[in-house]
Image (tube, rainbow over all chains, first blue to last red; front, side, top):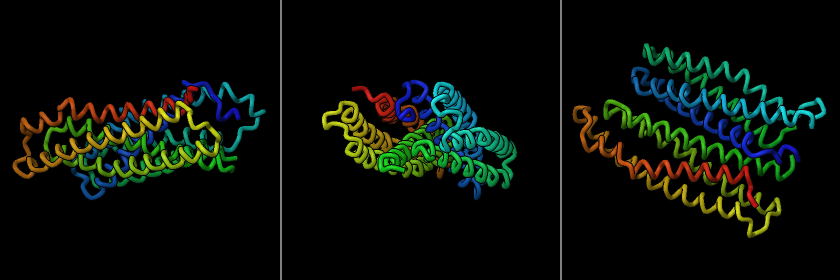
Amino acid sequence: MIAYSRPFWPLFLHVLGAMVLVGSVLVAVICSWVGWRRPAVPALARTAFWSLVAVGIPAYLVFRVAAQLIYNDEKDAFGGSDPTWIGIGYGVSEPGLLVLLAAIGFAYWWKKTGKPVAPRIVAGLSSLYLVLLAIAWLAMSGKWG
Amino acid sequence: MSTVQWLLMLHVTGAFFLVSGSVAAGVFNVLAARAERPSETALLLGLIRITVIAIGIGAAGTLIFGIWLWHEQGYGIGTFWIWAALVLWVIANALGGIGGKHQERTRKLAEQLAAAGDTKSEELRALLRDPRGNALSWLAGAATLAILVLMIWKPS
């Protein structure tokens, strides 16, 4: 029951931050797959980069801080053994940050050089991150385990 | 997993498609307005059509699984926050649809200009800055955000 009855603000910010993060990664996925065949179009590289930096990073911080506030409030209710869905959430959010930062780095390289390999790497990293985020939202909303 | 857990997972998945698709459309819209050349504006506004697929799946998913959850969880027929969310869902879709037509008109003009020298015209600038056209899309986003508030707050 505790999973469905939380204070408003931390849960709202956690969910909103996660949804905005997914939106920013979706922009990078679309731009980089379109850029696969058109790597020299600056608008695609610029849009992928700024979406991840100006929207994705703030959204990540909001969703991650709110998640920690919720966890700190509720961890005692789990009796020292976190359910699977929390483990999946942590498992995606922390290594996922590295994938996000790597995607930003390669998007910056794409923006600066327009090299054909850059959008392909951004497409791989951002698509991987989108899949990881989808697994996390499915696990957390379905309360797996 | 229970039926309610399945339905909640699918309902939340719909919400992720709806909100993240709207955020992506917003990012493309903002950066299209700031693009220097009409060809870039046309390209970015054209990519919004991909996000519309996610928004459509999300809008349908939230409605179908939301109404199913309403029945499954035994909320009363007069539950205020559910009716308020349904009204906002209709408003968000209507405003988003009208705002989308404005973006499509802008994209077509940008494509024409791209084919004829790729220089911005006053008409394109006016369409990109049109407060009414942009307000429709932002209000659709605000209505979607209000639905999220209601879903988490659940005021009686």
